[in-house]
Image (cartoon, rainbow, N blue to C red; front, side, top):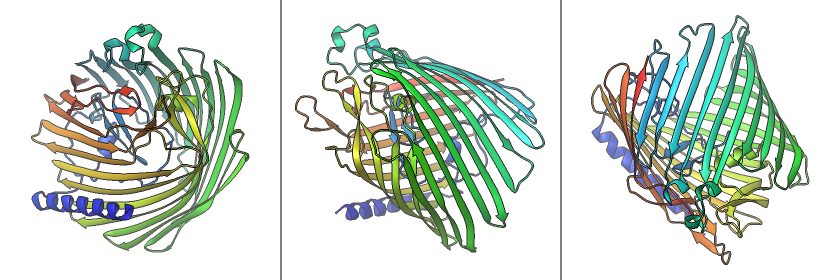
Amino acid sequence: MHLRKHITAFLFFAFVATLATAQTSGELENVEIEIVKERKLQVPSVTRRYGKISPHASDPIYPPIIYRFNQAQVMLPDLALPVRPYKLKKEDFEESQKAYLRFGLGNYLSPYGELYYSNKDQTKSRVSANAWFDVFNRGPIQKNKSGNGQYGITLSGSVARKRLALSGDVDYRHSFWHFYGSPDVATTEAKELRQHFDRFSMSAGFNTTENKKSLLSAQAKFNYMADRFEARETILQFQASHQQIVREKQFIKTEASYYLINRQDLAVDAKSRSLFQAQSLYEFSPTENVIVSAGLGLAFENDTLDSKDFHFYPKVNASYKVTDAIRVKAFMDGNMVPVTLHTLTQENPWLAPNIAMANVNEAFVLGGEVEATVAKKIDLRTGLTIASIKQLYFFNNTINAPEKFDIEYDKGATERTNFFTQVQFAAGTKTSLAIRYDVFRYNTDTLVRAWHKPQSILALTASHLFSAKLRLSSDFTYISGIQAQSIENKSVVSLPSIADLSIKADYHFSKKAIGTLQVANLFNQNYQFLQFYTVRGFQIRAGLTWSF
């Protein structure tokens, strides 16, 4: 039955893409330009192609996808398709323009602003500064009792020499939230519901530049996080990678990382957790149409949820070019995903104190996909990933304080499958369209359900250039199958499906000024990603970006 549904979905999207092709002409654009935050004020005039979305379904994703919860953030394997009250997207800036100022205002008393500056001569050294604030003073429930926002500043720099390039950055950000999922929210003061986080990080790294046959890079990073109560966490992180060219089309790639995590809370004494990981892959091309990489990975950690400290992962990745229009890929992988209070509170800011923490062990991941150019303007990708995951965590409401969430781990092995189909279409530089459909299935071992995980996601992104000055873009997302647990009798509660449409208009007044109007949650739905936390309804924001 599931296979029949997948085939039906596949045929439906292929049919939609075929109809679109009959009506439009041009070259494919690159969707990565929509995702990557570049700085350029003029409307892009070059022909680009959509970036490819990896089928790897990693749960959780690291670096983590950040949940905002005043907005919808869709978790796809390696892609975040946001449906939210957007901040103005950072437009593409010309190389001569190294600074910009952005400001705007929306309903729910939602001002935002951003200032960016970098030095003009970036051939040998680069220095930049970025400061911003993005605040929603009111939310969907009890006005300021459900408001949230953030502000921060980042300083970064890099120096390039003949043999070596150095880089570093310092970052501080503050965010605040409210526990407005409380049943007593109407009778509780806003300050009593407030939660906030202070996050500070600094990093330094280098990479070699002269020897093209042997490339080495390394980075050291320090993170500190504190919340309004007594939770504190420090993270020391070291990463290094090396690539050696053995001969033409043959490489050896080696990576290693080490995490030292120290966390304390109301009833948790400071205790260190460590994780060391390394992997080495040999990549070669036995024939003209085949690329293979194979190797080993290992991890050593001191978590207490499992009985093993040492983990071993075989890794194989193969790609076969059947024709110029069709490519088949398959992979076998495994990995240990670091889990910290820093990453968890970014996913869910309403966590209860003293939660248990353990790294997620992606013990075995097997997948494959087919890429095909079905027409001049249409790319099609479809694939399936099967994974066996240990210590996978889920968010579940606490019984005594339902506005807060505990972390529940599946202490056995969670079996997860992800089927996806993606169609990408573009007509020159004016029109682009991408549709993706994902189906997720979780077979938990010790838990009743995979709490707060979606079972299906349909995402559509479209953009059209109406003139040299006006571009309209939109995002639509439909999510279904999220389940939570009733706090009264522990029965299964199915949360309503989510349908969210956002539209954005950019108007270029001049080479230095862009006006933007954004509308989010056009259907005005008060849906929930997490039980008891409805998102804001219809949202509108207007702003201006000026470069100098």
